[in-house]
Image 1 (cartoon, chains in turn cyan, green, yellow):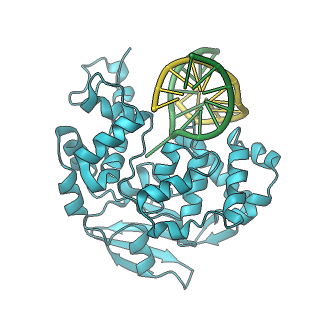
Image 2 (spheres, rainbow, N blue to C red):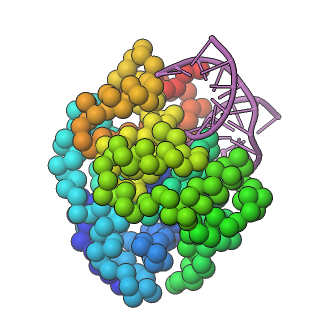
Image 3 (cartoon, rainbow, N blue to C red):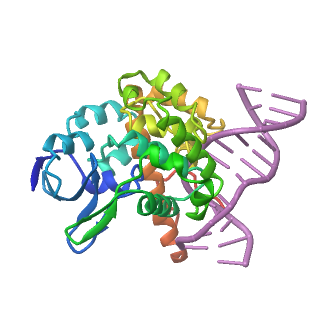
Length: 301
DNA sequence: CGCCAGGTGCTGA
DNA sequence: TCAGCACATGGC
């Protein structure tokens, strides 16, 4: 068992904010099962420490620190973002949320699956890909499977991917897997490339547009300028834009000016904030009380 | 039971 | 550059 010092960190907010799709929560113990650096793990947070169980002798505390980005100065980043009332509230609510350093290939494949989709189904699709084409790993009463490599997925017939429910994303994933497997897009080297070059490289993949490229750059390649613009972020942007249409180009321009170099952190806090605000207001919609104050004008009839 | 979901690719102005 | 459309599927 590894014990990792994790100050200014929330395992829950980090794993449940929608940036990763494969962690499984067990209510009885408060532990999460998942994978870090290819090792099946069980993680619990105990105050300012992480208890990480694994049977993989190669997993180190450094791997865990790296995956959860515990080496970044979160306090300094959040201070630099805290520029208005909305982001201030999001930070207050989800303090400790950190942008993960996920495996770039799994991240890329996952967000290709995310297009025009919902999180529950994305999780199911990724789980089925793993069960069918990954390596099974039993651990401590938990049975999971590693996410399949690009080399493996490149050989899977498109029809098989459709059978797992990937829909129109099946050919996208297969073609991108082939591109990666053939070594035509070395993902690992993109960690050391700047944001603009990284993004244009990712855009060469089939099924990867502006938004997915930003997700991979942010969650898998440490590009903290990346600011993925999806439906929820467009809603959050109404707080700043009022009448102007929040197109991705305008949103990017605004985000870099308003939030600075770590705009990607602001993006994830805002994303989680507006999504959970929607869920709260829906769950009590029938009680017919006034709209929650401070919420962006997302709820229209 | 329609609506919606962490969009992308293609087409035509 | 940019609006308009088709695209598969299942949770809610």
